[in-house]
Amino acid sequence: MMIHYLIQLLAYQLLFLLVYDLFLKKETFFNWNRVYLLVTSALSFVIPLIKIESFKEVVPQTYIWSLPKLNIDTQGPIILDEVILQGTTNNVNPLWYLYAILILGGILSLLYFLYRIYTISRLIKTHRMDKGTVYHVVEIPNSTTAFSFFNFVFLGANIHETERGAIVDHEKVHVVQRHTWDLIFFELLRIPLWFNPLIYMYQSRMSDLHEFIADQQAVKQNKKQYYQNLLSQVFETQNVSFINTFFKKSLIKKRLVMLQKSKSSQVQLFKYALLIPVVLGMLIYSSCADDSNSVADNEMNLDQYSYTLKKGESLMGDKKVIHDRYEAFLKSHPDYVAWGVISGNEDQISYSVHHKDESLPEGFSKTEVSSSEGAYTMYMNFPNGESATSADLLHKINAVKEQIEIEGNISEDGEKGIQLLFKMLTLDTSPNEKLIGEVQTYMNASNKSELHQRITDLFEAIQVKGDMTVEEDLALKTLLTLVSEEGLDGPFYEEIKDRIEIPFAVLDQVPAFPNSGPFDSEEEKKKAFSQEISRFVAMNFNTNLASELGLTGVQKISVFFKIGVDGNITEVKARAPKPELEAEAIRVVKMLPTFIPGEHQGKKVTVPYYLPIKFQVSQ
Image 1 (cartoon, rainbow, N blue to C red):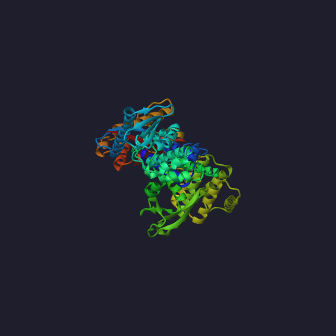
Image 2 (image 1 turned 90 degrees about the vertical axis):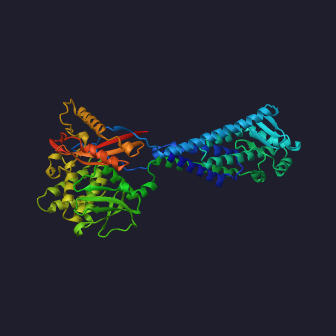
Image 3 (image 1 turned 90 degrees about the horizontal axis):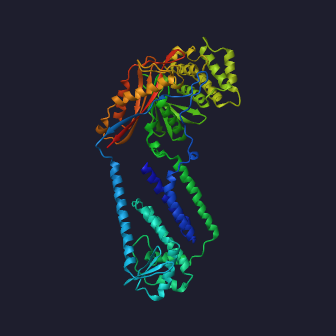
């Protein structure tokens, strides 16, 4: 988080300085430029912290199930209470060394700043001073130095009397306009950001501006004498970054050029409007930026879009989240394609993302996957010469299911399409002419809703495919069971009972620990279940892994599992920063006892769960 903040800070300061150097630096609006440098330097610190929700990109989120008939209103696994684990380690976080260097550099910068303040204070206390109402003149013996600090003007005793008046007029402008405060502001920024060269550049440009402003005012008194002073001998100065010096060799030429430059036209003030789109762009980036993953990271780390589905496994939980991310990436990055690798024994499919120019293994067929949100290309190694239409058909079934999840309720035209699909699957013989006609009329209808269009696409895929495979048949029957009036009492239940997962929120009877209860309500039963899971994991998790693996900070572990119709734990999966943590989480969850299974509509059902674990490691 801190590193990302610093990167944004540096990027924004660099952009602000580029705008200044390219468009504003040569204009004679010195006071406007002064305000620009002060404001943009402050904005560069603030903008990375601003998150405007309306600027965020619309990204796919886990959809809400609100299927009719079953009244399902929560998709995916049941989210259990987070388990908090405590661990200790003797290892030192490498970032601590970086932080130590930054802090040490800041301390040294602060000491150097205080030393220079002390040096100037001694000059004030130990030398003769002529006090005035607006400023005080401090005379430095045996010196030709000339500079100001707050309301003190320091003049060398060796400066010629004819030059003193012009110099005092110049330094008086610095005093009246409080230029020292500007330089002190940047000096204070340099203390914690001593490593940031852009702060030094800001301060240097501000110092130049101060001289231009003072010259612009002071030259009005005696223009000829003022030019002679600048062109004459370069006087000594104190090498202090937060004082305003009259003579500075590297700046003399710039000051002469600016004195002779014609006053900028008022039309040029419109250049400051460039600040509006620049700041707006920064706000959009800061609001939409994900601190954990940039777009470049996403493209480089393609493994995050990979997942595997076993034969008959539903796309839910962690895999549903990965799948949504996988499709969103492919639809927005046309240079990438999907690979679907079917295992040798055809019991699972592994999905992954690859660059389109990556060499494709032999035996893969191309198919296009499309929806209203976009399309992408997929390659699959279909066995026995099977065509890509099989994968396309499964995607069309999933597309109908996802659209129902999005809409929450099935519209009238959607209901009609579902009924036609149901009739098609319940016929004992081939579809009759009447059903074929109804389907054709449904497909040819105009002004289709999104769900109507997806069901039409599904009918077209079925027509192209012809006979459906067992997997396709079961996938379609699972969908129809969830949305039919009969629900789990429908004609397909026995075939697909091992595939259906009922969300926790609508279960008639939730799973429970053996010998638990009695409970006054299902809510109390759910709460007790979650607490028992947390207690069990906390007691059995090996927290010594913190020291063994050299862990630091907070380690987040996500565990997904299911309680099957027999009450046993199945399909345990985990995600963690370390494979050892994943293995330990899986080991502990598999130790859970056999549960009393969940029930819905009088039938035992599989219930998916998500268990978040936070492993806090102290040092």
